[in-house]
Length: 343
Image 1 (cartoon, rainbow, N blue to C red):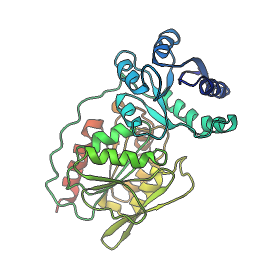
Image 2: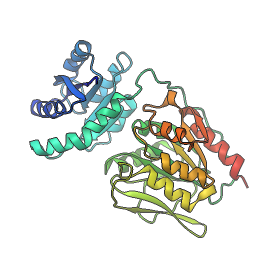
Image 3: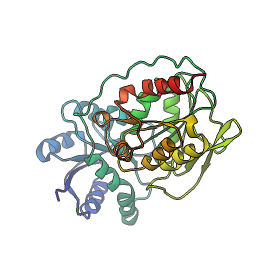
């Protein structure tokens, strides 16, 4: 088995050494080099040709985001950002990072080891499977407003690796007539709130991190909080979300499967489900449940996915009715709404 060659970039020598030691303990991972700043990292990339880079945001001489902006057009490499709790991580995602992890607060060897196992290693493995540079990244098509009243309808979206930018590409093309929208993006606590705030500034519609009991209504998007499961509930003609702590499902909390299965039960044929880029299979079974309940379902195609995992599994089991490039997802949502739900 070929090992994933990793370059660790962080300005703390102690942190670099601890990360490297723990990563080298996994049979499928090998740290081939470590660097203390962007200039050292550039030389290490050329010398060792790593498969994945872990990159600190805050570094001397040049921060990680500026480094990515300069590096990716010339030498695209799957990159996992290692960040403190800071909204600038989303700038890194826009610059081309595949994913990010929240830097551990505690710095003891035991704490670092648990963090590497639970947070960093899964992200590195996902990044190793990512399409960076060669994937198609075409301009998002401008969406014409729905032109109808989509009464009592719900839109549900799920994504993981690469999903922060994919979701942004979709929802920034929504207009205020879009049905109430619920989203699960695999992301740590606190970051989901910052992500929702960022989307709210970019979108015509209102975007909020979901709270238990929030109404799902036209022109509003609710993003599931990190570390909580979100479900759609219906009372009469009113939809709300239930947001509660819970165990991981399909390996995740929040889980796309949990959301989609609840949408299948609460909304049935009055829903549209969308599954975007992501590692693993979370959301596939839930999307199939939605389709069986009469919902319309859309999947992102392989060419435009950062990781064609979740959409592939969903497509393979028959959960995806329409598979389209990312830049056509928003238009496809509106086309499906117009053809199915215009009253």
